[in-house]
Length: 327
Ligand code: ATP
Image (cartoon, rainbow, N blue to C red):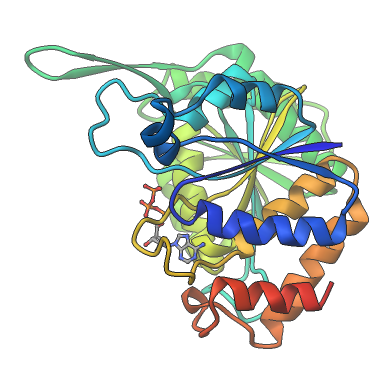
């Protein structure tokens, strides 16, 4: 099997480098092939997402992606990750959020956020005129149905209890209203309990009643915001993994970005990248190795080995050594 590794910018290469060490340790039989993407790639090659990287993705079984820095002068810029999601029809963004070890995070949480990845606010279809900017925001029945089915099937497979459909249909009556209606249609006959919630109430419930949340299915923008909020509550951006899934391709990336403020300092927390790697292994059927990685991360954190964002003093390399020593 072939894994395409796209480290990208900022702390991307640091945390993905550590993740590849872990990957090579547990699955030495997997072939890893590196590809260029992002701002640093642009400065060398004049492109953010070169054709050979697209080709690499096409011919891989899964992609391990780091992060990319958005250029300051964003005129004409099209985000490579948004392009990859679109080009490979990675319609489901899966963001599980749980505390990586007991005692880490502000609240105890074990939720899965399923975010629609192809339309909503992220189509980037903005038109500028003299007075301001128009944004066209698409919510289609087909995409809503596909993501709600995905959330339902995932909940049934993983024996989850409840799905909350998060929307803003009290204001966006037609578009978000369609999403909510389709959700209930899809859930008809399922053993999973279904309910819906306005996005602002959901943001509050994540803080005040996180145990009542289980699986969330939602539109693009809300999923993006709620998953950062949930990650912050469960231990910070340094611990949150994610997957972008389609019917034929899959890309795995930490929820955090390129964190230019700490890039190159050797202090980035690689936990999110490790848990992302575990998600990827699970996806390609290497369940046992995925569990080993998760267990080694939890054991290292529980033994008090932590990076600075979690109140410890270890750098990326030293924390990685702790995890490797437990594998
Ligand atoms: P980008 O523009 O690439 O999204 P950003 O800095 O706006 O970058 P993030 O990269 O998500 O957004 O980072 C937000 C904050 O969280 C930063 O201040 C960063 O220091 C911190 N952070 C993110 N990831 C990690 C990590 N893996 N380890 C430690 N701190 C992190």
